[in-house]
Length: 189
Image 1 (tube, rainbow, N blue to C red):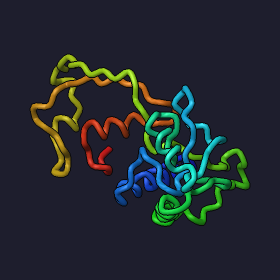
Image 2 (cartoon, rainbow, N blue to C red; image 1 turned 180 degrees about the horizontal axis):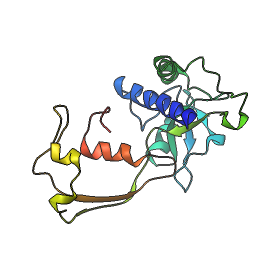
Image 3 (cartoon, one colour; image 1 turned 90 degrees about the vertical axis):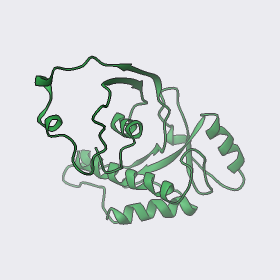
Image 4 (cartoon, rainbow, N blue to C red; image 1 turned 90 degrees about the horizontal axis):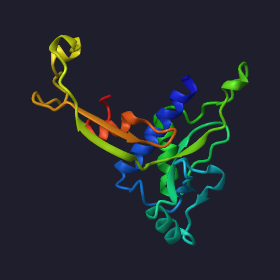
């Protein structure tokens, strides 16, 4: 689990980098690595392509059509970084997380070693549904609810009880999508 946590940390920093640089997560830049999206929603990293001057327009079109996705790194012993500005952002993310020189081979427990891979920087959610949820009795509220919001929390005292349902591709996190719906800061989980 520690290895996957470190990969997630690096991916999250790589994901945040393009946003801070004003780049689009959906539209590829020169140097990005794009991969075809399979029917399951996963990307086929075995067919990854480097975005160059020659294929930039075609990659942009296929990303808009939902055939390709811009990817970000899950580091490992054989992982590839993007080129150009996206690659610089990925390398900086590894430096910021102090993972750039990490040996991803676990010699004593080889099964824990990871080659690394790439994941899409954005995914499509499906089967979206929102409905009002029944109110809970006050005796079922948690101590956290009873204490109310901390100073840094975003919390509306007349907020609604909602049930939100959606489907995400394998390997993505519902908590990240929920944070986007709630417009929570990146450090609030």
